[in-house]
Image (cartoon, rainbow, N blue to C red; front, top):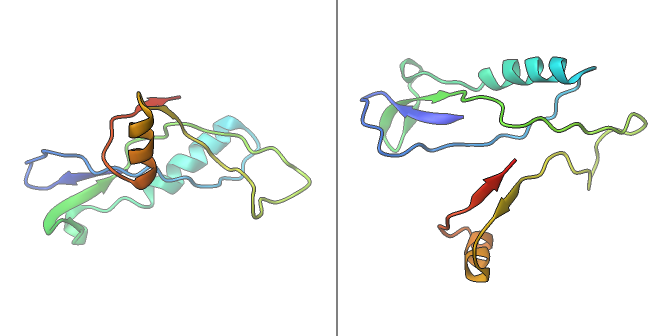
Amino acid sequence: MYVKFADGNQNKYPIWENIILIEANSDEEALEKAETRAKEDESESEDDFTWENRSASLIFAGIRKLISCNNPDENPHHGTEISYSQMEVKTEDELSKLVKGESVTIIYEE
């Protein structure tokens, strides 16, 4: 999901990667259900959605990855990994900054 400003002045793109659990019988069905579910979170500027006091829309950008959680005998529970992200930084100092939530350049791997 990303923010698109209504005034057309887009000097940054606030984004979210939402991780949503979807139950499906195939990857194709999961992708279709995930897209449908994600689009439910969209908001238009006409819906009075604002970001930083500016009229904006929250837009579905797409599904970046689909990860299968196969454990048919048990529902997800505390400690179940549902998703992960693999990324890279160049130095240990950058790693420390990333962990603290500070600004750092990352290489995001699929």
